Length: 166
Image 1 (tube, rainbow, N blue to C red):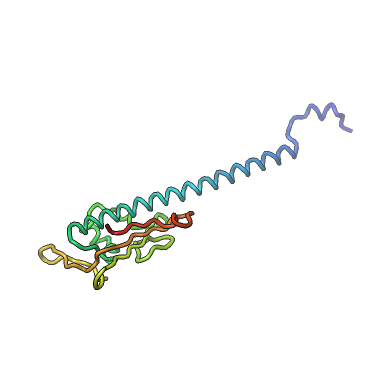
Image 2: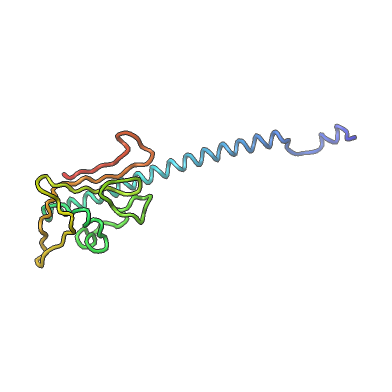
């Protein structure tokens, strides 16, 4: 039989102490993961607002120069149209942070921005705009627009970020 004196000289942790440490580590890990997820959402939402503001300023600059807004087909053609007529607009600004290879669409969804050109009279031509030989565009009838981004983890009035034509 083992004497109580020899047991008191042994050093180590009891099973209860080990379980308490494991539970505390689990709680801390859960808190870190939840906090990190929230920070990522806020970062993506901030990027969405920055992107919509960048698109808005370039679309307004196009309007100031040509007297009408580009249509959706124009903004979807980054390779040619956007590079030529909206200089300085980064291609990444047209894509939601959750779908970096995506493109702007007519209506926003969870992974795409929305751009809806409007016409107060007549129709807003859906075909891609191109200048004539003198570099002048034909008015496509688009005299307004709405830019929209859906925000993560938000409800109610904060669920979408919207910019409209001036």
